[in-house]
Image 1 (cartoon, one colour):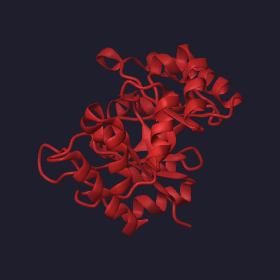
Image 2 (cartoon, helix red, strand yellow):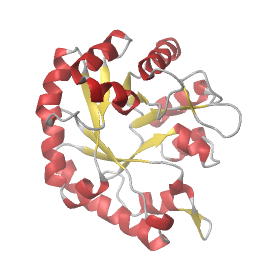
Image 3 (cartoon, helix red, strand yellow):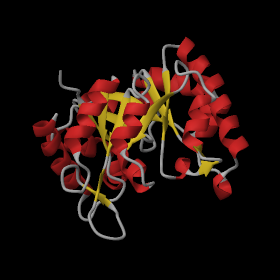
Image 4 (cartoon, one colour):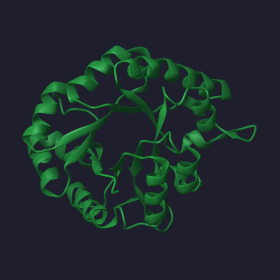
Length: 248
């Protein structure tokens, strides 16, 4: 069974800043039916949802800030309900990288927030970068944080690029969190040094094993994202969509 794919709208943020609705219509035209939000272009969540619907797009998840997720979960619930999504994702950056205790405490805070969101029918997920794979006594900060939360309260949005950037194998991390990673960020890495972001299928990540691991692990969404693009971001998003239609 094919897993549907969506676009993380952060990819085309430069266009969204200029004309939110026109960009949404272009996202639809280049091959996406579903999106993940990361801001609303000055609109409320309800207004953004209406604009997405008018463009023929359906939001499937939303990125929210860690302070909002952990300190104001009721606001996150309101946002998710306005968008009509059942997933929200967040991440955290500690100044100086954080200590072991910081990461464990973060896991506990996310557990409490995730429990409150779950009562409202919303699943909290954690979106990784590379810095979560610093080690403390041979244990990754990411694993310490995730272990401090119940799987039902905190699941994973594994970002393939950042896992690989940290020196790990995305397939292995997906398998490790099988049953706990409903959302995967599908993000490719360019060849050469230093690495940067590439359109899906145009980089060095071997995608078929990633897709198979995601399916086996119970992923429900593959979400395309490209943090920076070498040329026009909509062109990059289109190239990725064309690859995803062929590959999944």
